[in-house]
Length: 161
Image (cartoon, rainbow, N blue to C red; front, side, top):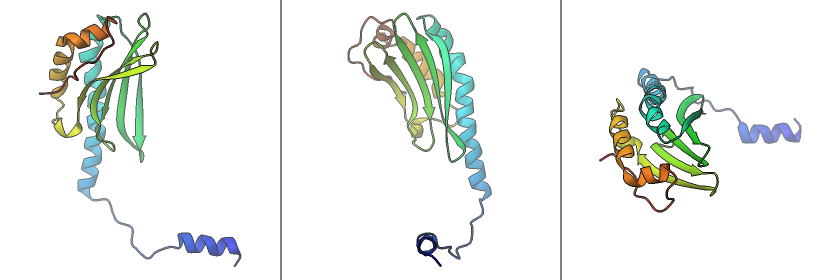
């Protein structure tokens, strides 16, 4: 046996531990995770697109991220090319548990602001919070001022209270 084979066997020697089967409960959890992100993908454009359009933001694209072969986050981008601003609405309920967030990205300033965050543990399973947070987001004067490009100062984050 040559040196590399001995080293490989030493580092990666097989164990007699049996492979665990995935239980039905784990399968259900995986399905819920996929459905939560998919639900976000259906609901967010209906809630946010028309209202962002009023401020000159057009839908740009959606990015999905996977971990271990499972869909774990979705990011929706809306751009206002005139103001050089991008709204990024994301749902990352799994793996990182960041939850729901809205960012405003200024390409001219090379800066990002977190405008809203609802951690995963504060979201109900049915995602009813999305309607409430959308209303609060577009009712906030500070958010409106930043979306219009009137200011770029400090802002209180919109929360799901």
